[in-house]
Image 1 (cartoon, chains in turn purple, cyan, orange, brown):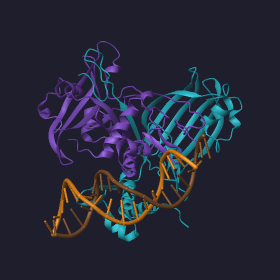
Image 2: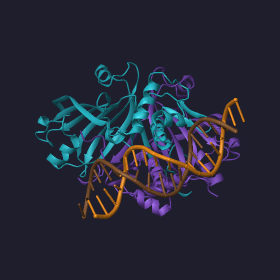
Image 3: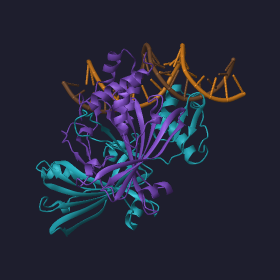
Length: 246
Length: 246
DNA sequence: AAGTGGTCTAGACCACAAA
DNA sequence: TTGTGGTCTAGACCACTTA
């Protein structure tokens, strides 16, 4: 049995349709009344589902018109986002990853594996560490993962090969962060300099959380991305991009 | 008359009490039943009020125990590089934009309009400036744009309506930046704190550069994005996302 | 006029925590 | 057992948009 609340299931369904392109940027998702009929529920529940998507920034509701997709996900090309394999300059460089912490602790009332790794690029002689990644992984979802050797296996490879879990979506929040002593040492940074950090969560296809993520990037990391802007017709809801109505 | 929805008023009252220290970090705010009695309303309305505070990260609800103050300073969430218009929390808030610099200078051997604006959110009484945007726009491409009034027209709207130029793609690089004196003043930030900044360029459909962009965000701005992960077959090259082959 | 979302009421039953 | 928050029902009236 699935004891997931109905409104969560509804939000999950709609979210999947958005991420899979069924409803695209600027499209209207089904109206509240449509959802009420489709799921045989009441309007309050349908609104709860939509409220989740609004808070995720995936849709926007406009009175009298409908609920419209805001996602620009397919338009993103993220470079250097977590993986340094892409940024290797020549064949003598390899991506490296070392485990610095692998412990089990109770977070939010559930046992979690805390896995901290330092990652970077090596060219044989020199190793330049570029990020410190901390993951929280629920043991209930991944039994036995606490004993896994992550020096020689990537986390997502273990997810896929050993648990048949396929991370599909991440929600990430970017901010600046003053590194603590440990991070400072690991990344060989100078004190007092704020670094770019990303915090977020990863979800599988069913929308279940599989990992909490925290990455701190060395100052040397160039964090670049490309976006494309849809030209919206005048009648459609405005979708500003570094710009907006005054 | 105050036509503000009751749940917004309730949230405003509780928020004020939190920010004024009536309820401090870890304290319980009044229970839903208490609020129902105090405001003479129903539980759904009380829950709507609390939901606002939950989404702002100000409180956390725990079943069986109560609703507790988390006290993070109120923040402003930007989703997928949208503008502040998207992040407005209620109908009393409006996005504001003021020109602080509009000069012509020669950059890279060509005359460019340097347009600096400070932007943010206003709720009538209070205005919170959240970013300083500097654009460099080539006069050769946009003759006469130096005299344009940008207090009352968005840059991209002018591009579209007056020049039929449709920005289509941006290349952005994120980093941290120590704000200078002017930025510090405009954003009311405290010295010594690094801010998130984005630098990049915008291109039209033909791939011609139409704008250089530099945005510095206030510390209160939280930058959220959603990404999807392509699940690659074992033989294909890895497309890492917060993870990679070791 | 019909359809959309925004607000609100007045209940119900449930799971969980603390006394 | 009492109080807390979590979910859900079944309506109501409203403001706004579009036809």
